[in-house]
Length: 481
Ligand SMILES: NC(=O)c1ccc[n+]([C@@H]2O[C@H](COP(=O)([O-])OP(=O)(O)OC[C@H]3O[C@@H](n4cnc5c(N)ncnc54)[C@H](OP(=O)(O)O)[C@@H]3O)[C@@H](O)[C@H]2O)c1
Image (cartoon, rainbow, N blue to C red):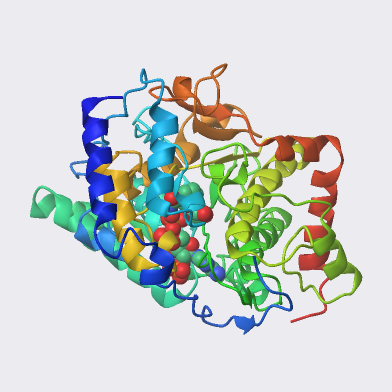
């Protein structure tokens, strides 16, 4: 263990022994059940729960506020923890578990660090060919950071956000930040003029909003995206007991993170809105989909089981499910399940794209951006707790990443020539042939990695195919409005 790590750990222990913190956050800072998201129907659960240009690409304060969180926004990413330390992963985990006091929030916080920024280099980013890029959830967090990065490179970015106001505000914020970061006024003017940002409304928790979004795309017959980033996501308070629902009655987390994107993808592909000559689809997933990962092993683990939640919702025509596997509602597991859905969706999508002559040149990949406490993803968790974690993970233990790092990872997935060579991959911080979460995975590269055992099993036992069919049934054959 390095001296720095020992010091950080000691500091945290002292911090946590301070009155109020050591005795368990659940008691001293009772967690706040999440307020229903605008437009959602919240109902009680039936059962009890268990650049190439002269612009600095660093985030400024405005960016940080946008995510509802904070991070240092430094473009230069903190160096990785000592990869040669054999006890690194175990110690970090035990420290974080200590911090978590056993709370399920730890599952969101224990994703291994990805440590280096992999923003696409100028060569890599294909700066010669300007692209049209769609990013969902681009008014906050890594989606907004990626939007700014790619807009500054000259690409046209469609900001698909929950409301038009949020999308417009995000475009304004990106413009302001770019202007503030320009080295002189002439530069700023030229850059601002060149930015191609299109704000649009697309509420993924309401299929009719997704319908409108696609209907409102420019209709000149040639308007297709070169890249589509299914990035939006939410995580409810881990202690939430009530089942929040989307407009169509799906459980909110899986309904938004998976079914909303599934339906959007169906409309975009069906309407020839994704460039059939080298178009790219990127899905923002997470390592918490994997029960064998440090983050994914905390609390209830991700599993889609026999899909009986989906099966029943289709069979009875209600579309209402609490959990994909038919089990009792658990908000923490619902988030992990939704990320497993993202992985299975991306892999099955790739198989379907390859099998169809029309779409075989489109590729789909997923990735995890690592642990980024400073984005808005943790907005519904206990805020005191989350702030302590942010400082601990990012500044002290240096196991967390910045929002700017996450934006770079999404940019890399979207623009890098290397990623464009192949689809069906899940990108993560690892070295081919190294153990996924072991010490060998640190200090290495952002590359294709292994998905969870269950995600692989779903390919073999037919569940991935059935999962796709049920997602179709839920979203396409609906009579609910
Ligand atoms: N942060 C991490 O540690 C981490 C780790 C692994 C994976 N991820 C994934 O990274 C992605 C981006 O998250 P983030 O960390 O950048 O958090 P974030 O700042 O909260 O960004 C999430 C975005 O999704 C949007 N969104 C949520 N519900 C939506 C809906 N119904 N319709 C349209 N947009 C909606 C949010 O919009 P509103 O502002 O309107 O809610 C927001 O713009 C998510 O898929 C998340 O699961 C994050």
